[in-house]
Image 1: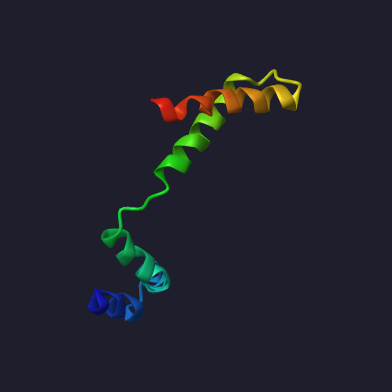
Image 2: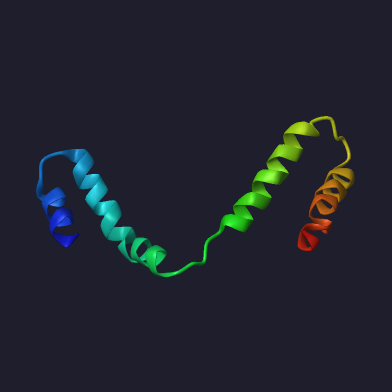
Length: 80
């Protein structure tokens, strides 16, 4: 991998240079993603549910009601 990064960094193609810089900046995180099973999938799923509720509940005028609806959605999540 280091050979490719060096080659891409030294070539004259701007897209490869940008990709090589990104790989160098995030190399540790990219490699760690292959060795650990921890992900942010649960959090992303919760955010998605809230976004869908926000689209469906466009007419909510009261923030407390919207907040209560979000809490209601996740109240029984641990029982499933």
